[in-house]
Length: 81
Image (cartoon, rainbow, N blue to C red; front, top):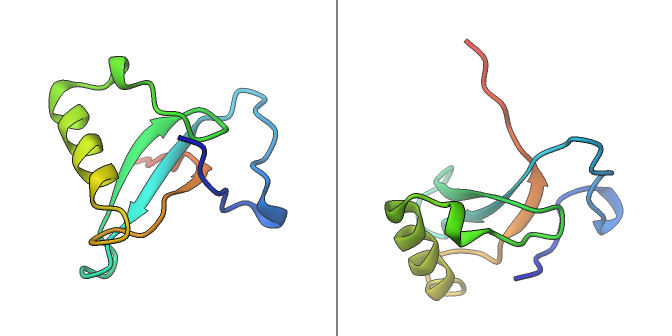
């Protein structure tokens, strides 16, 4: 599923080893979103997701426009401790 990019100009940054994620923001819970790894163009490899994530992805896709906003692609956020 191609999705809009959150990068300036509507284009994702060059892929040079960069990882991306597709983000579905909740309409009803501020700050809540579902995020999945994806390609630069927003395609999620469902076969690589764990079973629970597959179910969540299918559910959120079905709820876009009802409970979740259209997804955005962004560079993956990495947390460090």
